[in-house]
Length: 141
Image (tube, rainbow, N blue to C red; front, top):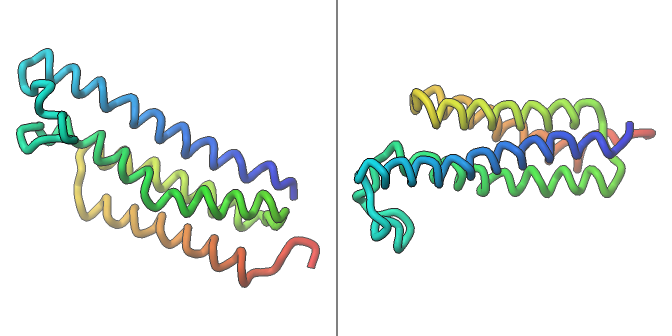
């Protein structure tokens, strides 16, 4: 299997991260225009005065920079080693889909239990990717 295929989910997750990043200034400028926040509210990050709907995209963006680092690493390891399998590629796309769903839930109706379930499934997919890379069958073996 062509190892370049693993770069598709990598690019998709990066695109999602940039999309969420773009929401941050939109929400902040909109809130500033409505006089709900001031520039001082962001001097040291986000002050307690920042409304939840304005802070939410920033929190989601931080989520997309935390555990996904391990996704990027395993994908690059798969790419560099040439050990891509259909299962690993499927898991990579599942991870990206679940992270996109997590962001959608987080940024819309934000039900914590639904969001946690999707988050847990994405983490399971990522853990299985790591386990398969180290302990699973290698292509051509």
